[in-house]
Amino acid sequence: KKAMEDEITMIEKNNTWELVDRPFDKPIIGVKWIYKTKLNLDGSVQKNKAWLVAKGYSQKPGIDFNETFAPVARLDTLKKALYGLKQAPRAWYEEINSYFIKTGFYRSPSEATLYTKMSTSGILIVSLYVDDIIYTGSSKEMMAAFKNDMMRQYEMTDLGLLHHFLGLGVLQIDTCIFLYQKKYAKTLLDKFGLKDCKSVATPLAVNEKLSKVDGSELADETLYRQMVGSLLYLTATRPDIMFA
Image 1 (cartoon, rainbow, N blue to C red):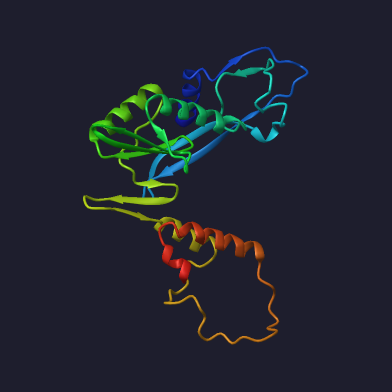
Image 2 (image 1 turned 135 degrees about the vertical axis):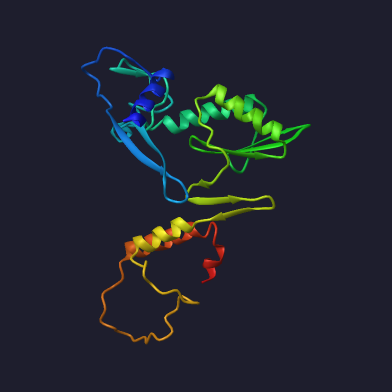
């Protein structure tokens, strides 16, 4: 309940919408709640989150979204993009990109969500993933100034030193940074029914006897694609399994 109250408070604070009379000749885009429990690396609950999102799948191209769309009166006129709308990610990216460029950042020509800022103090590197921002640099002063500036400009929460990101665990020590996907790997074993399997040095079944027709059913192509796709993501921290 508190997570929902916090979300409503944030929406109202940002003036995301304003109430208007409902037009009878226009379709209404509904909203719904999305819930998620964020966990710590040890599996304990970090916090509960709730998002009020628009049912963007009900929007129609050329009517509800595109660059030439003329706004019409609605029950709730959106003044800022709401989660779930087709144009919401683009609107947020355009906003944050404009702000970064205005404040002296350089956007990478090969990675549109990677920004750098140079000064006599050092370098600051910022990476975006939707509304998650991770940053590092050679100057503690630049990093502190960036954090304070972002928290003044936008309503943000400082989560401290990076511990996990996009399913990757991050372990930082004085001399190096380790990336790992232990939790993700265990999730894959559970998902594909391999939790109790025995580990081997090679994935090849050494005692398997092949024949032209073995009478067994064909493999599930969808399941096979899911397994391969999942393992490809695991290669982010274990590139060696590409050659297993």
